[in-house]
Structure formats: C-alpha cells, structure tokens
Length: 331
Image 1 (spheres, rainbow, N blue to C red):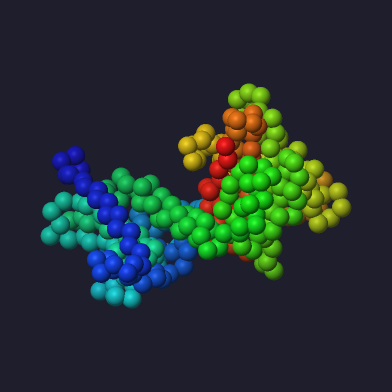
Image 2: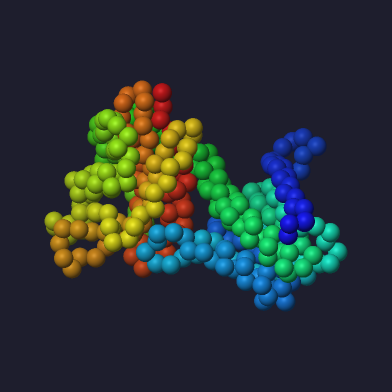
C-alpha cells in the first residue's frame, strides 16, 4: 500500500456528567471487562478480515498457567449494531466498501457512553483492510488493553480507594499505591509488607520489599529473581509444612524496562510455584516492578501474585497490573 495514505484521527472527547447545558450526560457503558464488540459484516467476518481480527484479539494473555485470551470477542454484523450495542465499553467498528476512498483508523473516546473506546477501521476491500489492520495491530490491541487498565486505575484511585492502606504505606514506607477496598495488610515491618485479598475462589497478594541500592547489577534479571526467591522463601509459607513460594524457573519470565511515573522501572512477569517438598502442587502468575529511591538509596519492589486453582486468572492479574501502575515513591 505504498501509495495509499493512512490517517489516524484521535477524538478525545471525554464527557462526564455536568450541570452545564453545553455538555452531554452520557449513560454508563455496558459489557464485561476485557470484552470487545466487533462490528463486521458476516461474510467479511468469515473471510480474511475476520480471521486477522480474531487472531490478534485471541492472542494469549502472557504467562498464565492456563491459556486465556488477551481479550474476549463478541461479533455482530453491521445491521445488528443497535443503539443499545453502541453503549458497549470496547467497540471495533469496521467498514469495507468500494465507497471508501482511503483506509482510515479513527479512535474515539466516550462517544455514546462512559467510559468507552471505539476504534473504527475503514477500507475499500479485504486486502486493504488486512494490510491496514496488520500495520497498526499492536496499537489497536494495546489501546483496548490500556483502556481497561485506565478504567481500573480511575476506580481504584476514587471511590474504591482503601484510604487506610494508602495512609499506612505513605507513613511507614514513603510510597503511594491505589489499592482498592477488599484488600487487607497482613504484615507490615520495616522492610516488608504483605497485602492480600481472599475470596472463596481466589487469592491475590501484593508484596512490597525494600533493600539497599548499591549498583545497577541489582537490576539484572537473574539477580532480581534470586532476590525474589530469598524474600518469598522467608516470608511466604505454603499450606503444607516446609513449603514456600518460589519462582518457576522452567518457564522463562518476561523482563522489560520502562518509565512509570517518570521513574526507571524494571518489570518481571512470570509464574510462581511451591517449593520445599515433593508432591505438593500449587502455583500461579506474578508480576513485579522495581524502582530506585534515589533520595533514600534503596530499591523498592512491588510484587503481585494470584492463585485460583483451576479458575481463570486473567482478570485477577489485570486488576493487580492496574494497582502496580499506580505505584509512586514519595519524596
């Protein structure tokens, strides 16, 4: 598509309830967390355009014990795209027609409901649609994923914020995190905190540990994994005597570096298991981030893990991921 112009238009129309006559009052969006409504003609859905969309959206959520898609798909043909469905939280709206002059992607926020993300893709034929989608696939998928994270962060930082935990972390450790109600602090010592939420079907844990910063080699993956194992072996016992949490080394963890709240951050995503005794099986996913507190010459690691047996864990980890993205060192 060398000679085809591509336009990407961002319409950030974040509309909230207001007494002003100049602003709309939007209804609440519908749909499940992680669900994307794909609006596409039935015959196109069965052809290559539908196939590339399904492949992208059905990509596995990385490093879960059982396979789960990154997002869930609900498909409806264009003719069934009603006013009710227009209020869905995540919508991928497509048009493939000879009347389309050039391929276009349009990203709209809060158009028919709040909160909402609509990504519209137009192309004149299947080939042009597939090429356009593949070229911008990463941006499209990450937009839906990040929208869900941002919604959780807003909820956890607002009405759902556990103010008791927020204040205790700030007072005792000079850090901030938006942790929602339902979590409780189980352990709070000078250099280690254990926060958890327990339900009949699942467990979520948030561990915080700090230690002296000496040099950049502490941020090498192997050193960080070894540090994690030393912490969890000492602090996180299993349900059977002599067992404890350990990092699953048979599955290579994901490691990345990025800026979070303007600070260098090292992130590890992997699996944990029980160690210490043969024949005892328990495990799940974990996600950790580490930053340097330059004022106090310390490294702070926030490590979140989930357990749910045979139950799905994607949304448990999506929630924990959102919490970790609110982490800040207080100076």
